[in-house]
Length: 381
Length: 259
Image (cartoon, rainbow over all chains, first blue to last red):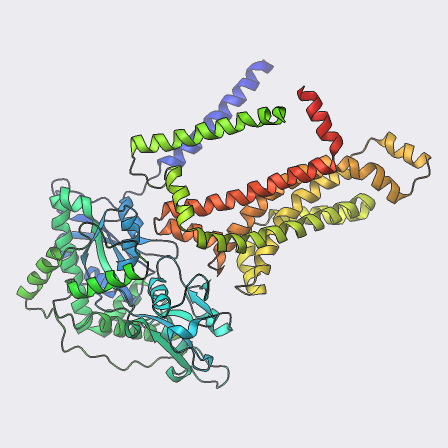
């Protein structure tokens, strides 16, 4: 009797352990499969997952607008937007199949591509880069060469490539001539004096400083209080947000290619709508992320629009000159070991999408778009 | 000499066979899983990125070694105090257990806020906390888990507390201490690297591993992991050497048993 109880207890424990393991392995997230038209018979909607490269904010307004205004739905797409985050690298999420499309800065996607990820750029909405390195005006840091010997904050994970290229082009060795510090995704380290120069985007962190009260004056920081190194001016800026897709799947799966065209078309339509209806667009973003401040998002949309419009070739169509420039900088400043093999970007999908939009009478170039004056308030609310 | 070589050969053979198998399997199968590159790629990457890795090794290595030394010092001191005073035992041991239970993930950002993002102090403190506990617990055991007859004998000789400690407790504690030391060497490496995930200098092994992995630069990530492992192995070997010098009688016994 005692023997059976011992064996029975052990057996029960083993079964319990196996059950727990099975439960842990068994739960899968099945919201991101793209079903073929045949399978999704009732509504003929295709499920699509888009991986953002950061948390929800106006940087991705076009996609949220496309959802909100029904542009995706019109074309039969049921789009789920996956928020990004600190450790999430969109290129790897895309390659793993957890997303159908991903947003990523071009060099940040080309590096994993060089390591073997089979991804391709199918649209490039952002024509210009908004990456800055910001320091206080009294720090004496005004050019990349001034960063020598300084503590230079950056976000890492591929966000720092323009900075590295800028340092190298000024003759500095990033490993030995500067101290690179892992910066949190805010400007607190700069404000606290822990770092001498901070990484910032024109549309986000730069404004965060301008929304902070200067303890010396009791007023908000003014642009004159800051020195800004704009990598576009320095000449080492590289292309920012682009839409990436799974290259192998594009070739083998014609449904996926059709979906890609529809997805790009509706997304670009969302960006056009945001350009023409900025206030409503900001509201759409805020409804998706209520924690964000209205004035800050208004600033952000304004600055993002400056990166997109005008798009001389039509929004989202890759400009070969800009691409070559990015590759040239990336290879000469040792971000990439060599120019990308094979086809790293295609324009036919974006071109088809833009042609469809033009035939709907939409302005795909945006020559008339102007920046507006945005007033910043403390905390960005 | 021959004896020593013969005793070293089994692990060397196993190691070589393992590496060759790893390399061949990946070359033959060529799976899409570039997450685990073949050893040849890792070593090639180590050589190619040596400059960056060497800087990172110095940065992280400094934190590991200094944290380890301070952790050992505090651990041994704590153990001695606890072996002398029962009251200290009742106060200190539960505190040590409580502190050791706090996960690093919770402490690292707090220490960064205390000491500043780029100061090595926050990383060193994490290492000290992780190293302290095994050293403290094991050394305490070694200092107090004595055959009562030996203590009685010393007392009958009129030995002072310090003499008892020096002649009986410390020799008894040596094996316990060195066991803990070997554990702590590995823990120090882990603690230092994990503490680097929470901000600070980027020229350290932690960021090198995490960011290269994030960009799918797996050979580079593994090369940095290899560098960290080598530090840990080096410290372990150093602990063995110190042990041999400190406890010559132990080594003689082991060799005698081997025959």
